[in-house]
Length: 400
Ligand code: HEM
Image (tube, rainbow, N blue to C red; front, side, top):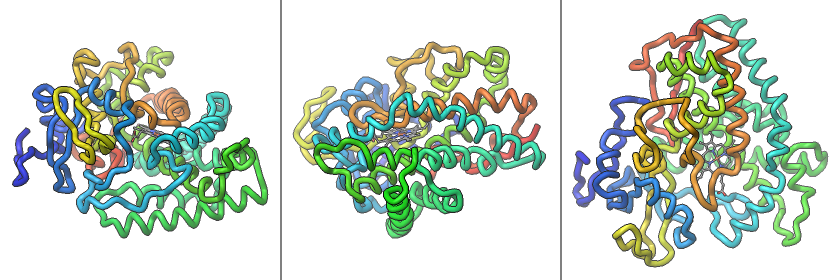
């Protein structure tokens, strides 16, 4: 760790000398102490957990709550108003368990698999448009952003004319380089959009997920308008930016590693493996997940006191040599390992099945359709999203 702050604990490293690898210095911290004190962007000190086993241990331990008093990864440390029932990410057991069960019931593998033809159509249409436009194009604007937005909007029945507005809001909510008022303003706009959506689905149910939730069996009687808005809000936001970042950044990485891309081109059946390795290698939740201890916990040789905050650094964990051999080697032929890109434990990503399907279709189609696809700008000139909750590329000029 390089920098030491006035408070004493070293700052969490954020600068990357290779944009496709974790920040410099993180591996050293993990080797020295997989659970240690550190100073975060907010200026506050907290526990930093970087070891694979240690991250899993925290994320599966119900003594750690998601109800954190400070946002450690933002400059002002303020936590925006937390949504209630149905929002999952901001809930602890027992409500979280109950609400997640209600949502998971409708979020089945079957429903997700049924989306395949629609996702393929959305991907094909966007690639047609790129071809018609001619290179160079910004792949983030023309493809990585709109595709996941269309997929989730379809799943929820968001009307076509409001999709662009939704995409704007989703991005505004994910910025960390703005004050809390701007994030709250984006939240208000999202609330308005979701309220309208829920009212429309109640009046006019369809075969979308919101309609399914409205009519699902609900013995506890918890599914009201607020529940539906919270659930839809979390799902829409969580689904859009994450998948968009993986598409943009994953494409940049594959184009930067022609040997790996050649393997995928030669053997398209590698696409499932390639997606798992991309997820692990890029683990885009770059600041990790924040938790707070609800009781004193003895853990990995340290004592975490009730009320102390903990950051589980999933990116550092996914490069732990105790978990994966030669972690800095990007290798799409690796046997898929249980990486933490989708988190772990009670809050593990509910949309991972959908994300995998989308990414497999995207990377299985893109390089077949554009065999000569290449970056139109050197990697060193790309702007990476080191200021956002999810890591990625701000733009990706490509040509063919
Ligand atoms: C590549 C894409 C994705 C990545 C990398 C990703 C990553 C994650 C991670 C790391 C968590 C756990 C957060 C924590 O423990 O604090 C999570 C939770 C969640 N994700 Fe995803 N996600 C992706 C796609 C999606 C999609 C497509 C959806 C919905 C369709 C979705 C919905 C959710 C929800 C609702 C949660 C909260 C679950 C809970 O708290 O019980 N995600 N995701």
